[in-house]
Length: 188
Image 1 (cartoon, one colour):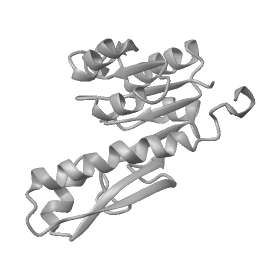
Image 2: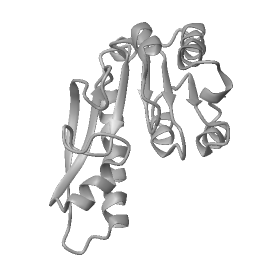
Image 3: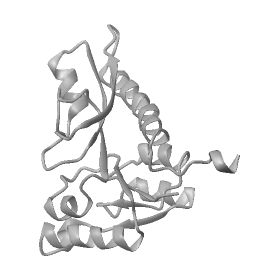
């Protein structure tokens, strides 16, 4: 089985969904007080955290991340609410091996506030996208998407909750269909 790492900055609900269904080598957070670290502890998943401000540059910060990924021989990085833009140091070392989940139907509403931006635009639907990470912000090649309608009686909270529910289904679907997983067919 090849190895995955999950990166998250906050709550870690997508991390938990992934870790409950797939072996996760470790979770990384760019916030030492992020709740995702508690989730990892409860699930028995290794965790690491350090913050950009602890380094002299973003390059040095990302070099420390690359060292961690290489130390654990990570094959795929799953961004799940990781709120830092992946810079050239990390991208050059792991290009083609980093995917991201975004709470909007890209290319609509890229950036940090996809749900809020869709709500404020008054759209009748938004969605969830999983895509490859490239040097842009939410511009990488799309792997899979799903639409989420905005219902007549929605509040932003109910709309957001349904988008998160779609995320919790889509990420495992993408990972379950992934060719990097070793086949269990020979073991059955």
